[in-house]
Length: 275
Image 1 (tube, helix red, strand yellow):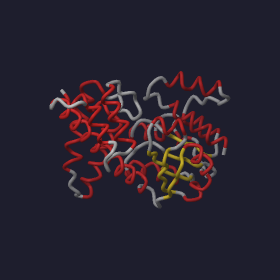
Image 2: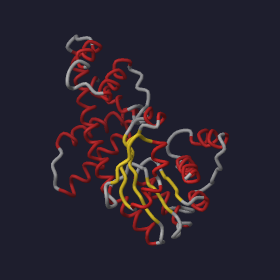
Image 3: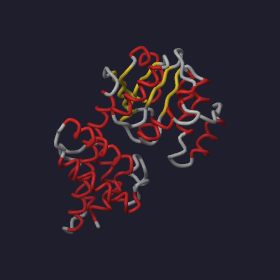
């Protein structure tokens, strides 16, 4: 499994859409990784390839684009898509991979940058069960738990449900902290009291501290949270399931992104709520 774990790192670097990927690639090479110039190079070099890029379009570009994954997919290859995407995109990729004889697994990730660094993410997987089993050593290195959810699309749906909860909750926290400030209350007092209530949880407390400190160090980029809310709303349209709170929260994140906070942590939505 060492080869597939290595190739996952190479595909993240190959994205070119999120930050200083050249520097990241150099760090991996120094650690002993081999650099692939294109997605097809990576697939050729590995039995199992992991991909984690910015959004559904980037995920499709990696697979269907020039020198993309499909170029080298064959019956002995496995492909694991870890990008936060919608079920339809995942199914499109799965059909293309399996049409060439390859095996496909979607493996959505729940957790922050800190959890990724600590190897305590939660992995939500769906698709080829044997591929899921073969990837366990890699999943154990990345996360504390991995769940197999059945057919392709289920993991993407589960991830969007959880992201909807997180996005709406954070927007509510931001508005509450803004109201406290406007009312003349000390935000640190609000957080201290909150910590003693049944509402307290690591995510809310961490984002509350980020709001008070005002630095918004990026754990989950605001633009990715807004993307997940948008995808959740798309899923709700297909199912005719009303999501009025998610729709309102999405507009708040969109405005914050327009104000230039897209690459800041999602807690920067407070700026929109405050001003």
